[in-house]
Amino acid sequence: MFSKVLVANRGEIALRVIRCCRDLGIRSVAVHSEADRGAAFTLLADEAVEIGPAAPAESYLNVERIIAAARSTGAEAIHPGYGFLSENQGFARACQEAGITFIGPPPEAMAAMGEKVPARERMRASGVPIVPGTGAIAGVDEAARAAREIGYPVLIKASSGGGGIGMRVVREEAELRSALEAARSTAERAFGDATVFLERYVDDPRHIEIQVLADAHGTTVHLGERECSLQRRHQKILEESPSAVITPEVRARMGDAAVTAARAVGYVNAGTVEFIYSRGEYYFLEMNTRLQVEHPVTELVCSLDLVAEQLRIAAGEPLSFGQEDVTRQGHAIECRINAEDTEHGFLPSPGRVTAYHEPSGPGVRVDSSLAGPGMVSPHYDPMIAKLIVWGPTRELAIGRMRRALTEFTVTGIRTNIPYHLAVLDTPDFQRGEYTTHFIEDHPGLVEAARAWEERRRRFDRVVRDPARAAAIAAAVAVSG
Image (cartoon, rainbow, N blue to C red; front, top):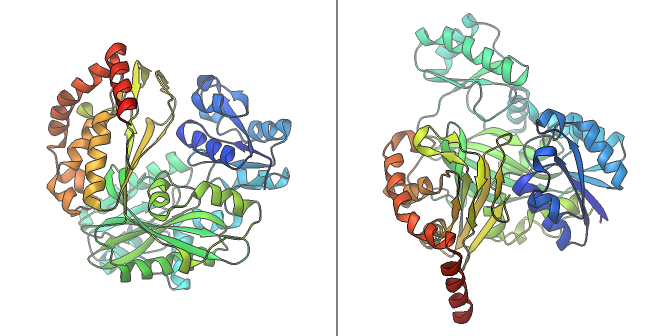
């Protein structure tokens, strides 16, 4: 096992990795920007190295400075977290050239899955079901012929990147030219690659992903599915495991397909194979060659530490279990707590947090970038915490999440906590009957969130009153 690991990330995922290193007796190094000077993850690490200004290009995306920090501190390995350089094959190769272990897949596997068009063809050749579609589209005439063959509506997608950037739904041929031009332009600006392709647009889609682990000794396993359909502008806000609609038989087939996909590219370490699911059918979307934001729900239902497994695999150890040893119990839900104003188009709401109180109690876990009041920087992603709950049933997990959200207090900025409470109250969500269109199909959520905000203020006042908060804490201690 490594003696020292550098974490090339920030916020809650940096804290998550640093804590795991401490569990395993590994010393940790945090790298940080000027804006993150004194942040919780820099204080928890054994060492911290400032690598540049707030702009990610000059700090968290600066490969040379991160490699230099690893060399100067004697770190043997680098964990990239998610986002930033986590799926950058150039960074993985730079680590190799520097004699530093990259805690992730080989760069060749990242390259094979990094562009959607070649990845689709590789999956097709391996027998993994893919959405009917095309290769790279050269022009509007070719696109029109392909769309007629596939059948409208079709989806125009960028070959590079993710997050729904460059994606356009086209329902008739008259819309095709302008949509194609817009998709190409967006993809070029966002990824430096204007390549796009067409897929059949799947109505009533659900976004289902399968977690896989693969070691360097030929063992690849899947850990079941996560339901990630609750999205806003193609960005996930709530995830759960297991899905309310995936049967054991479908789970086994999707798991086998995910393992086949990973083996087809020589995958090693943790990864996620994403599928679109509708009416009993499923199709390969893409593979995320890194740890996912929503990995804690899999950890809770499988009783595994995925970061620890990543570290062991990267250190050359074989997986200590096979597919037959994987067991799943209960139900887990994760809500992404974002600093954003849901009443005004979900605009980011950075600033100083004046009071901070995390929920606790049975089945509750919080992965946060904050340890108390502090700054939420305007320079980075607005997610400040992940609230994860587990229960023996989905119904109890929903109840625990509702209770935990009402206890979670973040004042001084706006958050989406009331919005999550509104989602949980929706009958469609409670029945597990939802698709990726859930938010647009429920426009009343913003108003319902406003009502929840009023109800939560009573608890917030307790947290801001030190005397009352101390009295409650004392009462809890006595009763416990």
